[in-house]
Image (tube, rainbow, N blue to C red; front, side, top):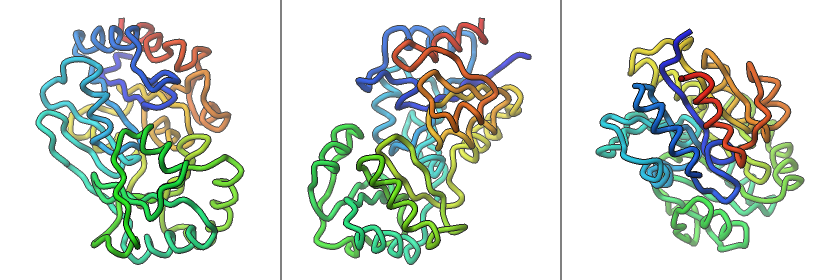
Length: 267
């Protein structure tokens, strides 16, 4: 089988634990691109944050595509152009926001490239630094006009698991719910998942699913792994992600797992 595309998650997969792109990864991506392989980033991050890593990988190829907001938005990196923009309907979004606020959750709300909160908390400050996104503080989320890209909570694992359980009946069948890291819970449109984002990209480029390798570590990566011809979980992936993948490698994100995958399958 000749693979033509590599789709990789960012945090916990392509990035090391310090949220950096190691030299070994940059060299492997350059190697793949020289062979004509499409290397696509796919993340829960906003595209503004993702463009920082697009640039850090090296020269951005013409027509480079990326998948942000867990598949809620597909973008063209150079020049920046938003190709898809799926959102939570405003009424549903505020049911979720109000439910989370009633439970004392530190809520963050994305509307396209804008990130909002009502209070600055340690968790929100930490998310602002890790996402590399400025946070606009509002008196009330109702100041936001229009539909919502996604709702996010950063907190300890027991807290976000409790929040998800408390709102499960409210959102069942109405939106996508993802644990995108051990401390992140996200609510996204039903039309937004990484598998659907990948399908849009490969259809646009005329590439069959069998020609795609997808790599990830978290549960929000599972739709992407299933959409690819070969779904690969890195060594630090969750058990659910490893079980959903076709194969799991031993190397972690800190051991340049994506580089090993590139050299194994694209030589």
